[in-house]
Image (spheres, one colour):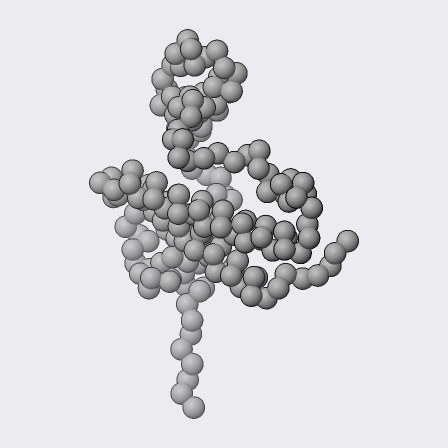
Length: 189
């Protein structure tokens, strides 16, 4: 087993890119809030694709390094999980349309129902729609959102904005995160 650590320049590049990807993910969440009704379609798609592209670039940097150091092509293909790749340029596929129909409580056409993947995605959309009727109480998801929002608020030095658009429990946690991240001023010597 190879125990060579990742080269420091590559490690730092990956940390920078992952940070950018996380910030884009936070903005996706931000643009889903009700006060963003005028821009949510455009901005959620921009930021989601920005995040996906950034994380794809991370994977390609690591893959290029692995290739350079002699990793077998079959192993690299396996690690890249190439079978899971979906191209955005093709636009939404039938499975995505079926999932949205389920989310919105719409029926699938007879033609769409013929494919088992469409039926599965439709049912998954229906289940998500049912869960959306209950209060948002998954502690892990709420905590993740709060951390992302608190981090962004601290970076932008706009902690007060948290109260204007988040559910109260997320705003409270995000404010706590932002306060913890506050850098204390050092005394002059």
